[in-house]
Length: 336
Image (cartoon, rainbow, N blue to C red; front, side, top):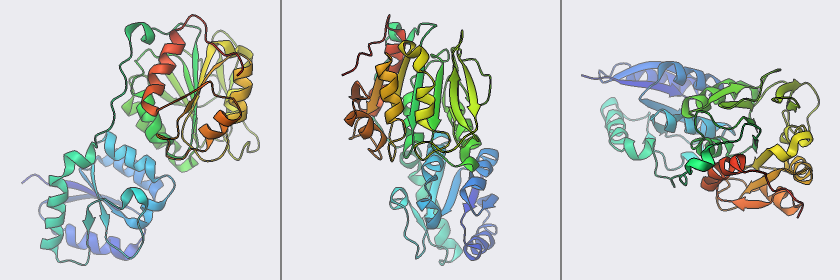
């Protein structure tokens, strides 16, 4: 019998104990770990690569739960929500339910039913990215891509970066997330991308095929002009409510703005809007995600309303557009 590698994630010690006791006695289940909070869940799932995750409803309301969902999709993991009095987050409300109060045979029946639906759950249908023309994929060596994102940004980044080739234009990203999740996020993006995704630190040259991500890091990701530009991680206070801040990344590139295409993706608040406006005025090409495809239409709305973004695009057109602009002879960036 092939056993189902299973991880249990819940902050309730009582529920965790009950599930461990019941499922460890089931011959078709192989328990490979438990965690009570999301930061430990990321690492555990990366290490164990389970086929099934059983998750407490309370964890689905955590702001970083979207990152865990993205990991489930990338790793083709089936997951179930534990039935409880706790109200699940919106993303978990439609998940298959496991009731820990049921006897073992009934619980196993629920698990088998969830696994039978696994292909649809693990890889939900979504719009395919527009094809990238061969010409658009040939980036000029002196072009750079900058991206800012927040709430809903992990899925958005996975979609945008999915069209980037292994030798993509040098790219720098700021994604708002907690420090406990930054390493797992970067490993997730690296696992899903053809290019090399690395954490922000001092002195990384912006070279083709390199994507530098500032997420939960102890400083602002900034760029130092040079041939090529390189990264800096600069300690400081929060800017626009965040550390690192998208505004700080965008502002640091104004000295070579005509070589830059910047995109602002889904997110709450205004971080990145003012920095994008300064970039555009200096000659950069600028893009904002549209409202229909944004999980939270805050940051891109702010950029559009103040004239920082030249164009608004649905999410699946942003990756191809970034590559096309990076291949263009000269990015258009005149102020609106």
